Image (cartoon, rainbow, N blue to C red; front, side, top):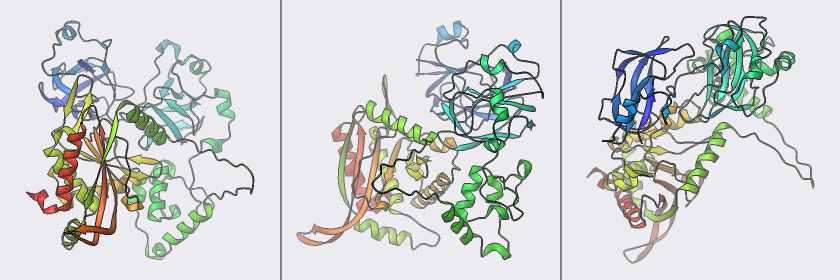
Length: 541
């Protein structure tokens, strides 16, 4: 069924947009995450991603043309699909399927869906923004303003935790923060009442009550917010400066500082009110006088600050840990995958002796570092080109076979699991795969991955070998049809040429969606993969 794409609302003040450039033309294939066009708003020119896949059947606004928000921008559907009825009806915003989501990187404040007449003059209702294409709800990690504070355009209002990262949320309006609708630590759906900004002293007693967005957390009344302790809305503080003053820093800056062993008291903040942001940490160079002492005190401080839980002997003792947005999304998606896709698993044992020799030779080249996991990823990429049905996804009306290979690499992070994607993996060399995986994994652990770096995978590799796990079965990372689980290399007795000798083996397990991949097809893929890994030189043939 064709999908109508309308002119998106990319900022809170945007009423119309101009198509600066089309990056797709009619007849082109469109994948989820592809950039359709660059759209010029009243504030910036932004990339506009597609959240659907298919063929671009119609362009409604040509490059250079301007149109109101919700005007027909494009139609995406199946190749050859009849869209005459949609075009004849004018393809209004009331069509069955509408794509109006903003680009992933846009930080927008959408006014509440209530009559303008219901709002006092100058009052702006700020709602929970949609900060990624998969975000359905957000958690307020930190409020950086409190009720009564003056807000300037561009000020950071709050830090919001999504399913993928903690992001700073800027204000596109100026005024006084009159009301906070979602308290720190509370979670609410996208478009729920987040805050109200307007002229100081404005009576907004009826605005919050009349707001109809269904938040999962009950917002406090204006009076309750005003009387709440100011510490509740203050930025989180990691440490104190020598003069006893609190140091303001974003959660991401604190995380990076902790990972790098940097004391925040030594960093000069360039953010609002001297607040330390991630760029301050990334650009920080310790002076000679404190370089030697930067790391150790921080580690000791972290140890001293770690919570100590004393369990009374012989007593029932429980602890409740609030689920993060990432943990909620992991639970939701993996449950959907397991219960909608009929999984089956195939396992094969691979001899690693030649792979170990090849890796040693490769890593003898200066500035080259390749892991066994990199070799497995490369072997998967080559094998997927020979067995494209493995590189597919199920749709009710068709099986989509991807002839491009984008391999997702599962990475464990503090809050759960993320899957950064190596695009066009089959065209990458082993050393390119190695450096890319290290870069993506490092940024994943620092929560610095962009949302589009975790989208578009066609196959996934999960490796627990570094933890000593010899064999396991993963849940498919949909919409992929398969995921490969990689175990540890084990030294053990093996039979070679009729003799028992010491050898090195590794177990691979392939979880398949039976709707797209039959058992024999999955087995043939594993045989090809085994051949490539056992004889790495064959990957070059």
